[in-house]
Image (tube, rainbow, N blue to C red):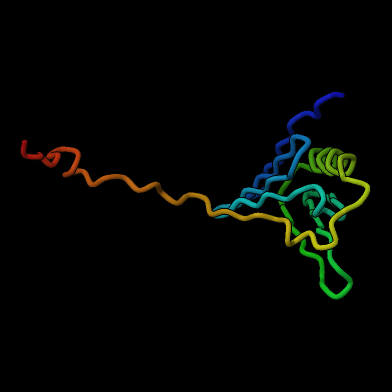
Length: 122
């Protein structure tokens, strides 16, 4: 079994990544992890790409769009993801997507605590 190449598709303020597993979509402030089972289809049209999630009949599908992409790269990305989609998708793709915040600084000790550490009495 061959490992698919890692694909990166930058567009505007978004970046899509695919390496055979979940598709990741990094936006300015959020990262979305989209499992393949959650994807109904991927559509490249000109300088944009849309990832359409599966949805039950009562719900509208969630669509992640990335604009400002290279047209040839978008087609290659769409073909690679489409080829990896499972035969049986999940009924509600949006429920499988995980989203995390990006860019939140990690807490750091205050400068004065590093310069003047607390002394303990012995």
